[in-house]
Image 1 (cartoon, chains in turn brown, green, cyan, blue):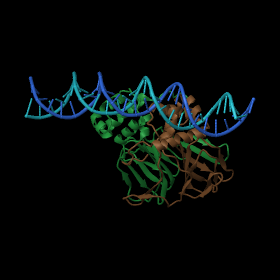
Image 2: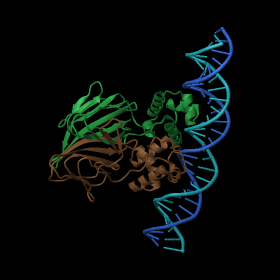
Image 3: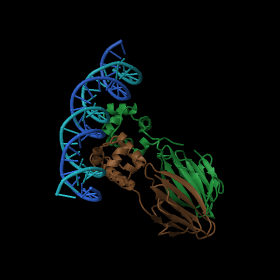
Image 4: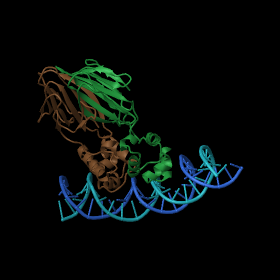
Length: 189
Length: 189
DNA sequence: AACGGGCGTTCGTCAAATCGAACGAGATGA
DNA sequence: TCATCTCGTTCGATTTGACGAACGCCCGTT
């Protein structure tokens, strides 16, 4: 959620879309959702049509019924696979010499991000089954090389390369060089 | 926001506390906040007392007026300097060989975490003035060596070392070797 | 065709969230 | 001491969100 002054009004239409999206994902009808959430069908109908200004209680009930964190209903959708090669990206050079910071990924609000250090050796590839829906993995290679990303389109990464990809779909990590190291930020919204 | 089935009702009291906390942080009165947000004083008074069930529009207006992401009003609060040397930490070896993932930091709910890649050369040290209150920086060294941390107690770091420290106090980053690289996760709750 | 069931939408009613104004308490200064 | 300002709370009026019932629609079944 960017803190520009320009976010004047609540993202009603986005919430509308989010509700419908999550409901579709759950594969249930509006009527069924009404029963589970304890809300009236009419209320849901209005919300999905973008009309309405739900109360916190209503939104919360929806989050519980849909089994998704509250935040996912109000926050913008998430990106797919993103690759930033070493040397690429919006580098913010320090006024002070010899220092470069590159923003790789800005966290959406409500996201939880767990930071891991990884070390791998060539050989078997690590194939991860999908995690929780909405999970995004951020991978930053330190040393060595690796082949990583979604199983159907892995990317070869060299030191300094950054890759992010959906964690809720099958993905792999294969070290190509000995002592391949890096950092993974596991983001589960 | 945990997805346990046990979250029956919206966290009214937490939101009440959050609003008052953020308002205090901003150093403005309830009356002033009312003017800025366009809400009635009475409404705010009720909300801060835990009474009420704010609409999305109301909550959003509050977020904008307070200059905080929406999530911070609804999510639980949060957690200083921690150092994990390369090879230390709770390593979760993969069932599959040659792969090690070490959890360095678990994200508190509601935190925003921005991921940066850094590269620095020896010489001048980069001295950062404090960021927003509540900011925590996570530093993971990839190559080279660095002296980093709070200005009064910096730590020498080697590849693989992890350090986290408050970002809302003066801190430094000094490369000790040429081409010192790493990752920084800037966590501003 | 006619029926039954589930779907999502629309409309009138009611409860409740929001508002505006008035109030008492405390601080400040003439 | 009294006047004046600002703070936060409380109370009645009004707007509005949520509800429940009825509706039209579509798809299976008999």
